[in-house]
Image (tube, rainbow, N blue to C red; front, side, top):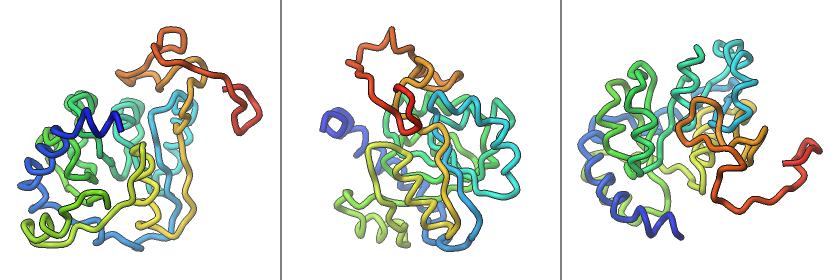
Length: 215
């Protein structure tokens, strides 16, 4: 609720500013069920660092989908994703990507995401919409084609999961989707939002993680 209240104006502004880019974009529906290979969804959690070398070995065998701010880290470490997914409408998300050269990688985006990201990206663009937007049909009529719908959630990884399900019938793997301070940090090294558990202002609790360790 806090997110929706604080970003309501930005989302609406982005939605209309992105319209001129949406007209020239490809709908997500054009890629549905085109693949049978595995898909790897990469997020910017702290565990990403230990998986970077493995990701280099699967490039020819799986679709690597970069979730938003993971993109600069991947490229800096020699891992080129097949797709970048962006849904964040805040200026901070643009700050993550504005100095990243990824024009040769398709950008898969929701019109709510920050319009400067679309403006900055010079390569192929793939557009989709999320079901909670109430004027999808109107938007589609204006740009001239149905964009297709991707199921949403509190994280860009939720969108990535539904995109992966649409693209391929193969297995899907998550990398760096820690949702916790693994190793004492919030994000992978190289992410501008990275903070330590001791420095964060959030109220943290310790729980058992799914591998039996403490998180």
